[in-house]
Length: 437
Image (cartoon, rainbow, N blue to C red; front, top):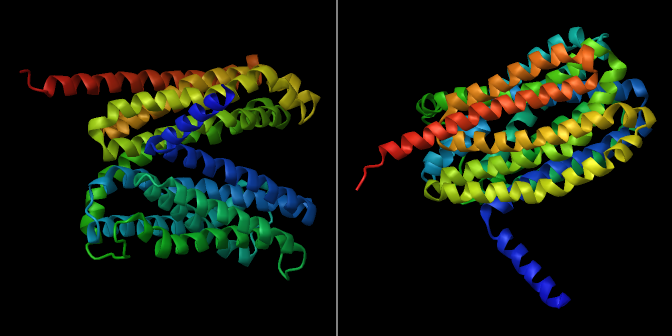
């Protein structure tokens, strides 16, 4: 009986593994999990190899580098998902990818250079300014990180996220292998860490261009012949998807700033740590949403079935960690110290509840992206951002860090209401457009 049950379970896993939506989702989540765990190891070794001052400056620069790359990639990854499914193999597909990469590289190089000038005035840890090596490496790191993200989405668009998982894991392992050399290389520790991150991104980007992208089966060759016409066709998609991204992602970066400003750095430490623990839930639905978006671009006639399967996958994959956080949350927070468990236990429960709204919102946004309702999706994410920031600002003083959790939840709920309204309106419009027999 046990063998029979095991065989049925194995058959079910094999069946799920054969579905591109499930497979793509797992590899997207795996990329986030692997790079996060290896990144933790990287900073652990850095802390044991370099001085606290060098680690602090390096962490600030790497965080800024990744933050800037999120904005300077211009939403071109989602543009790939929208556009590549309809592009013919060979020149057309190659032109779209090449134009997107060139634009991401140019905008990121400029954005990184601006960041290198401004960061010393914005971040106290960098008050002394950047040395020449760091000043040159930061724009290169931003460019490499932004292009890497765009290439990831080319793989997601073609439902081959396994390639992105392998490439990003290899880059993280390379960084892990090089950080111990910080004690012997003849350069400053901060510059060495920046060099590692920039070089790892640029190296995997180069490998992707010459090995990974051609392996996707569309006869990829770098070409910019006709880039002006292609950019003109992509311009509307860039504006729409980047607006959605900014509205969806900005609150994650702004909430810690608000908590610090209203409650002080100690309370922000409790909030940020609890939020990071809760992030074990918050990366599942976006991964499935991105995979669902790709399914809609490739097989619009089967999209309704894909949405129902995506809902089941979210419940299956997010349910167990949600139960763990609800039952063992205080114990997990206690590893950081007794005060973290005392101050963050209620906040963690609020954030787990908010994950329900977030999951439904992420799937709704994927539907709107697949249906080309980009303006509507942007309205939903910006409504979410405004409500989350405004409610958090007013609720923090009377409620403490729980006010940030409630504000986050209200923002997600607001965005979900807008997204569902627009989704149902689009569905009703589609039904009216179908001729009645």
